[in-house]
Length: 259
Ligand SMILES: Nc1ncnc2c1ncn2[C@@H]1O[C@H](COP(=O)(O)OP(=O)(O)O)[C@@H](O)[C@H]1O
Ligand SMILES: [Mg+2]
Image (cartoon, rainbow, N blue to C red; front, side):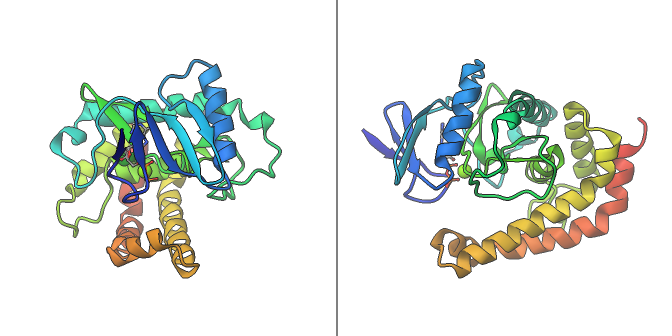
């Protein structure tokens, strides 16, 4: 039986028995290579890569629920953000030893200007993670996988998991709560002080990269990205960039001061 999965690109992701069938891309081969590497290391929180062709990829279906925005209350608990930070740390640790097997000529969807330290998920957000028993459990949707820095992956993860959205937006958390949740994520991940210092800039850069990427994709005729723009996502990112620029000093003091 073939079921359409919602929460991502509409009508493009299917569940067939205990597998997920998704559109393939030029980087799918590299993604499957990495997932196979993790599976070999007995990592159980990513899907098993099953097969791919020029048009489709098949991976295993991961158990758990997936929540999209606006996030329900149960996605905003301390346990949830702590488990998300742990999951990202575990993922980075498991993948860092993969870097030595790369040539640097592999095709990925996202480029990184940073010195590679880990394999970045690239879109580590609640909508790409399954939840079980009130905590973040499994990670999927590896289209944005690429070698990069811890900081670039974390900067987008905190944007989505806190979430660190402009307080002018409907449903956004209060400033104080955002700063506390941000600190909790970073303390759990155990991010260094030098990286914390650079976090506000990294968050801004990551969102600017996203805006640029969406615009280029839409100009090149990619309908999924044109729809994103039409749905107001680009305007939201620009609003959040302005907000984070204004919050730089407050962010640094909240995440760097001794408790
Ligand atoms: N491996 C998987 N295990 C469980 N659910 C999945 C898996 N892959 C995708 N899904 C479900 O399908 C939805 C859309 O998939 P996703 O791959 O994130 O699409 P997109 O690439 O468009 O973001 C997700 O919200 C999730 O509910
Ligand atoms: Mg997704």
